Every structure is written in C-alpha cells, then in structure tokens.
Length: 332
Image 1 (cartoon, rainbow, N blue to C red):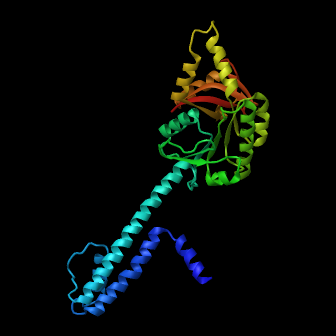
Image 2: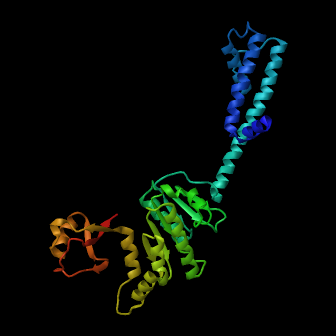
Image 3: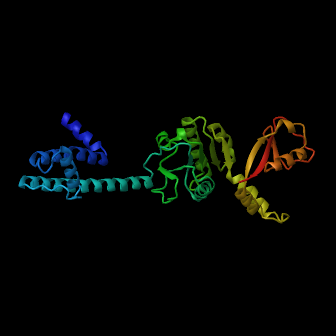
C-alpha cells in the first residue's frame, strides 16, 4: 500500500519538481562520495558538491579534476546519470509545454483571471466585437465559450477559449464565472430562431444562478421570447432582428436621402452612449437649458428616458423632471 502510494505520488509530481528532487539528492551524494575518495583534491564537502554539479550538468569547468581511478569512475557515472536524466527531464518539460498549448487551443484549460468578459458563442460578429474591445480596452481579459469549435485559431491575446456548453455549471466554473465582470450571450445562427432563443435563455439562467449580480447581455431573435429572457435574468436584451428590420426599412425608404446603416456604424465607432441622471440644478429646466452645460462637458444630449419611455430629440421647451435620465453621446 505504501509502495503504491509512493508511486502514485511520484507520477503526480510535475516534471520540474522531479528534476529538482533528482538534483538535490544525487548532487550532494556524488559530491560527498568524491570528497571521501579524494580528500586532498577536494578539501571541503562544498568543493565536492560544486564539482558534482558542474560535472553532472556536463559543463565541466576543469577547476576540479579527479586523479584516482575510483574518482574517475565516479565522474563517469555522474556524467552518464546526470547528463542523461537532465536531458530526459528537459525534453519532458518541453513536451508538457506543448501539451499545455494544445489543450489551451482545444479549450480544455480553465481560466483563473478576474474582472474579465465572457462571450458565449463564437462567430464573425463575436470576432469583430473582440477586436473592438482589444482596440479600446487593451488590458481587458476575454474568455470565449463555444461548443462547436474543435479549436480556436484566433490567437490574439488576451483571449482564452473554453470548449463546452455554457448551460453547464462545470463549463461556467472553468470560465471563472464568479469573478467575471460581464457576460455576452450571442444568438446561434446555425439554429432556428426558436432553438437559438431557447438555448440563450437556458444559458442566461445558468449564468444568473452562478453569479446573481453579473450584468448579462443576451441576444434574442424572436420577439415573443423577450419577456422570457428578462425573466431568466438578462440585464440587457439585444433584439437583433428588430434592429436590422428597422434599419432595412430606413435604407429602402425612397423618401430618405441618406445612408442610415453607414451613419449608425460610424456613430458607434466614434461615439459611445451614456446615461446621466438629471442634475438638481436642471430640474424643472427646459431641454435647451441643459444642452449647453452638457456640451461643455463633452456630452451631447439626444434624448430623455422618463418612466421607461424613450423620448428622442425632444422639443426645446421640454421640461426635465427629477427622475429623468438623459441619453448622451460621448467621444471615445
């Protein structure tokens, strides 16, 4: 039982620790041996250990050389033992590093960082979103969970890939869901709208169960599933089909001589939306009274949220109330 336990313990020790263990045992042993065999040549035990270290590593400075036949036999033994085992363990460490990189690409390694973004589902839209985050927030760590990819060839740091189904707690724990700062659940374009929404809602429930306070952005394709996504715990619901349909309508409208798609794309590329509570100094003031003070802060007021109702481009005489939220544009 003890022998079996020792074997099990040995095989569980990392190769680098095995190498260090071998050095700390064999080098003092051979150093002590040569010290007792040739005490005149090696006046102290430390000299013998130094010779054993340089000889076993096949460096051989030549400052200490055994003169007796027995001493040279010891030297030959340590060269064969030390050089061979050191080469073996270095090769093992290299193999371990290669296996680690392979597992990383195949999504089999857990993520141990904190304050990171988690993206569920990897497609071209997710890829572009990752590019934007890296461009504007270079230090932000990103974890991608996907169950369809065999490996992730997207090698730009700081992206960590995990292969699996995000509805499973084990997969979410691999992504360190407890320490994440935000989660984005993308729609699955390979499934029907209903199947994609069902999976997105189940994923949202699993995420909310593992981290009750984390913001969750969920993409829903069918309008009838919006309420279910909200019940599941989604903080923000992206209605992709509604947005694209409205955008196409404006693009196809013959009375509009503009390019709404390009306008919105460049707007989002150069500006970002911000929600600001109405300051006490502007309560009962008009919309026009608030525009200039906010412009001096680099914010352009484009609308107001009042009791969950969105009011864009209000009239100049529109009166601001205490609980209003101002919708602003800010430069990136």
